[in-house]
Length: 235
Image (tube, rainbow, N blue to C red; front, side, top):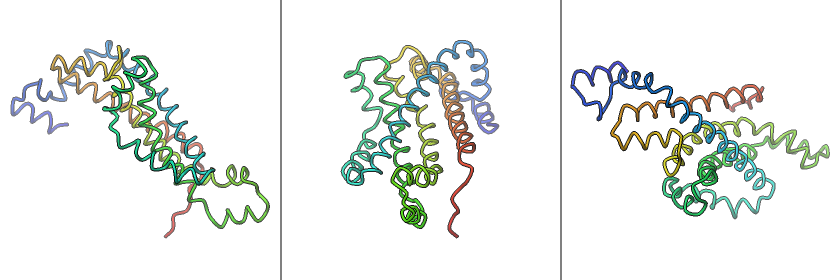
């Protein structure tokens, strides 16, 4: 931050090209009141999309885990879904579903579900074979094996995927707002870009980073509360 401030001062860099940290802080303080509504809109959209995307990812992972032949058939399609740029798909969703809430939620869901699904399937697959065989020997059914062994053992991996999805959800919300919105940080960025207000663009970027860190931190706290044990690492 110090180097950034010194460079903008020493080399007389124009504010519309690269504002200094002091300029960004000043703009943040002056525009805090007007930004609050945009922040709340983005937070609301982020949370809704994150919950839906995480739920979809968990559901897909559980279905593919329970029905192995479906995994061979559908897993390549899951990977293919991530090869389509979200920014390219978003306009199509707006055409198909209009400019309401639904296409925005679909964009965030597409961004969030994949890391959750992959991490969950990986965690369930790495269940301790010895414990699995032992539970089968004592007559445990599939439901008991899943709830008592597979799911608890997979929780660290599941939360790893959820933490990635939490940070991606903010990005997905901003992208969705770029395409069509009346309020939100993404909408605010588009307005400032049109006016070459680079300082306000940096303010929006700082807010996006802060929201992503907050989402990650909340999921990390939830993981610490729920996962009281960690599988021992092999030496």
